[in-house]
Length: 242
Image (tube, rainbow, N blue to C red):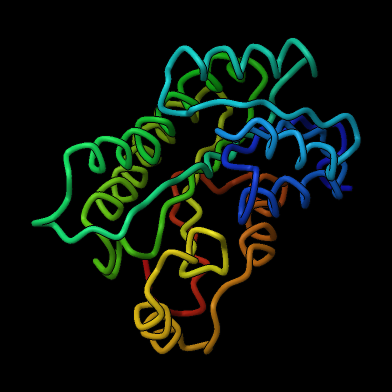
């Protein structure tokens, strides 16, 4: 129960890693705010979490919607202690065939949405302290993946480093959680040969599971990580070193 009485907001909580993280925090005593672009999925995760969890539908790339989501969370549960920016999208595009709208959407969700939630959460957390966990990708280190996705996740790392320094005097820790290939619904759209190539590149010999990521998120949000900020924490089976 190391997160007892904390309020933890997880974006992209309707499935995959986000759902696993939300449920892990709930099992460890937190009141969870499950945010997802699909409001029904957000509500389903909240129902599974229990313990007073709430579900909120929100497009993270919409600044006004992000402000409303943070306000609803705080007004309902009274505070915000932990933010996990997990929401992410991607598409299988080669550079020469990438439509403008795919670039705009991937950057908008993965990077701009992370910025919006960091900004609004910091406004609430200042004076009380807190923890922000931004989710990037091992693809930043390997360069393997669509250019818009890799660029967006590299931006998340830079954003983390900047705001970790800025927010440290306010008692707010900010770290980047960097998963490797993980068995989530997003991976379902990856061609089989790409998936197998990823597994072949992982020294531990398997794809990550959402629970692997959730365990490290729980650590980063805990008092055990109280002197950890501005770091890239890789969870990738040894696929790459950051």
